[in-house]
Image (cartoon, rainbow, N blue to C red):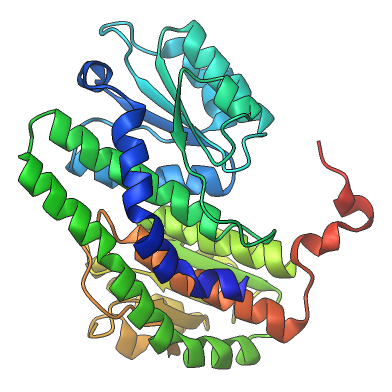
Length: 358
């Protein structure tokens, strides 16, 4: 997993143009212009990527966007989709492996209701791909099995590229401006590279310090609520520890009152966007109740970092709509390092009762 995290800058530089071209070719102008709403769906990491992409679709493409879990959409939401416009909404079923039964079910339900469906998957021949009308091909060079790092990254990148494409086709920006956004997105590879360099030592020191803890909390808002959920998932998948992601304001209403783990390691993910001031407000109460605070914030942050016990700094500026592509890296790096330090077996080694799934 550490090797996969370290590979992300190269992955972005080497595969960006290929993935961008696939996005451009996957859906024609006519269908894109018909879209009036975007509904990205998935389970686990795929759902987190959907949440992380919401701001990009709404801010760039100016389309209302409603991320849902595949279960929620398939068994509840699909039946209530609007028929006001042809091929509305665009339902994007996300599944890197392409075998998620609930995503297949949700895409088939969307098609029955007349929605335009697209499968975002790395396996074009998979059940998920066959359940959709269109395919967004997310294949990237394989690094072997591990908790999703490269697959999550590729899925999120393609969603962000699709948001730029929709913005361009809807004539909200010129082609030149859209290409400038693509170059900006590709340059986040430099930010990720600098962030990895800055975070390796503090991530290892933090993993050593927290190796005996069994409960973790990740907090974020806006597009980085998805990042918080993703980062928490990596702890559970790699180490088998309890780990939860929560929205910043909801943390103050809920987990703030948990007394069973007074020194619970709590990671606040905040890129300096609209929620940054509220996260800064949470530092005093989090410290008051004894939480061990880690800040995943810009390297020059002065609002949150001074009050944290540890900082995993993001080195370089990135717009908030693109921030999840960068801010997922410190959490994944920490989870992989904690796994190594504790000698844990990811997914509990798929042994015994964990070798069975349904």
